[in-house]
Image 1 (tube, chains in turn cyan, brown):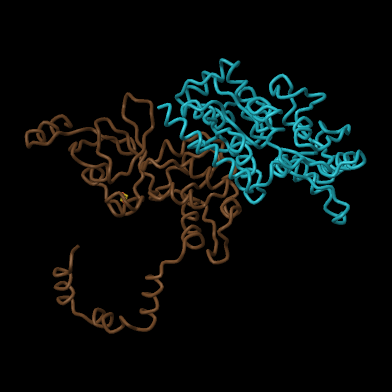
Image 2 (cartoon, rainbow over the protein chains, first blue to last red):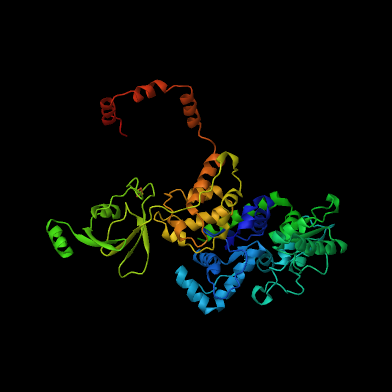
Length: 285
Length: 235
Ligand code: FES
């Protein structure tokens, strides 16, 4: 059983369906995840100051809580939460001063034991691409999907270490497993402009537009991401376009749900898994 | 001198302790609450005290006991004096008062953060929960507020007395107890179905069902009122 850290943005924007879809996909594939009993905002930005420890507290508390609840790792969906939790964890593993200061303040002994997982990592390492492929009932034959990673899943490579930061293929592998065609375009690892959108919107608009145009020229019928902010920027930069000109931007869960037969089917499968798990645990007990 | 007082009182069956009010030493019986200790020492409390029963939150007090580095807090009407207790009352905390009209707000996810934008500055230090005399998980309900979970924030903060100690400790200047109050208001105004019996009663009042009884009370003499009070129904 994984611990689950929803993150503020994902939770506050429930109507996007990202959370619901992610959990349904995992449940249907037999992966169990349960929301931590208590968690606070990770801060959304990894604290770079070496001599300030307050920014680490919320993340360490969640990581420690995962261990306390005896979960097999901490799952998160949002790229920002993933980035922050993972890097804080790396720091807690390696920085003795941080261990001491944070540990003293929180009155806990945490040294980076918890593993942090992203949804796509769980699909790769716990489910496996073959099983994902087997679970596809309606292959997305006519879709050409451009995968967009953005910065937070990639950099710094040494700490995040999720995929090859220069030429990641994980989302493309997922797209392939769904029976769709992955689109190759040069900017899948570029920055979308991120928080510039709050102050210098022109900057993020230009950066995002470059990505979208490139994906479109390469023949994409849609772009997928796992980052709420990237998704916002990629949509926002197309704001003034006519509806039919716009390239749809989806969370990566959208094509997965579709290929696996829709939410209803997923929910049914999830329930079946939960049922059989319950029965087997009862018989083994 | 103090020693004499101590011995004298002790002989009358009282154990005496030394407490320090704003730095000045007083000797008081150890059976008193902080609030009664103040009064025993000769203070008249007209601010920073209200219900005297642990409900109104007016009497938050910061103290430290000699030999211990930790600053502690408590409600003066509920916490007993200890020997060598250094005391400070917090009679009034100048909290920023955010004005809003409940009817013009919405029970949606952004409302709390829109009304109190500073909640998103929470750094997760948990000083608020650590200081809360009611043992409320203050940081937890602020986390609910940040992500728009109004009903969860309302539920988690239900026992809040609005003493304001959380806000005095907050490095991000969040007014936790006011956020909590708004969450409970939004919850009951927008997120739970209205109570029918309340509507019925309000209608009855408007229709004048209780006017005669009310007039009778308003015109009653002092003796009648005393009599009514003494013979009231007690559940
Ligand atoms: S006086 Fe009301 S809580 Fe202490």
